[in-house]
Length: 142
Image (cartoon, rainbow, N blue to C red; front, side, top):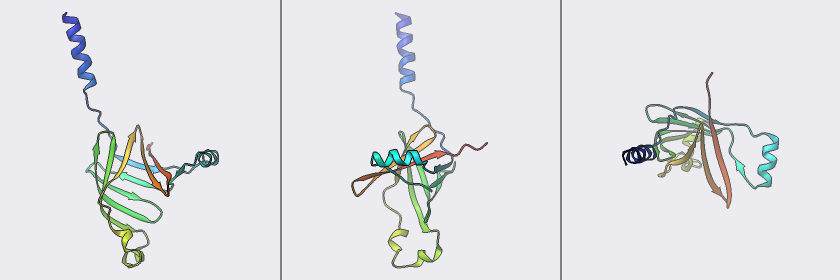
């Protein structure tokens, strides 16, 4: 009876343990290869390119794409990374003061949410009923 009890105790201890993630570092989208682009077109998938996210150990982050920079804070919830915007601006500074583009310098009230999968951050959004993916890989410094 004691071995069975010990086995069950050990089994439940491992199954209840919470997974911890070490996500600090730089994540980037990779340039899409020609073969992958063809497969994605056939499957009606699209991917963002040219995105960088720097996740800092102090719970801050910097997100960059070809036109904007976003700074803010992050937290992990279950298997997801949530990015909360504090400041959003265009890389071309003159656009930051333009009334025409002012809506694009406001932070969203909801966070950007990425699934954490090993050394990748993955996000999907729908644009005109089409899925567009961000797949960022952690930059492994050598």
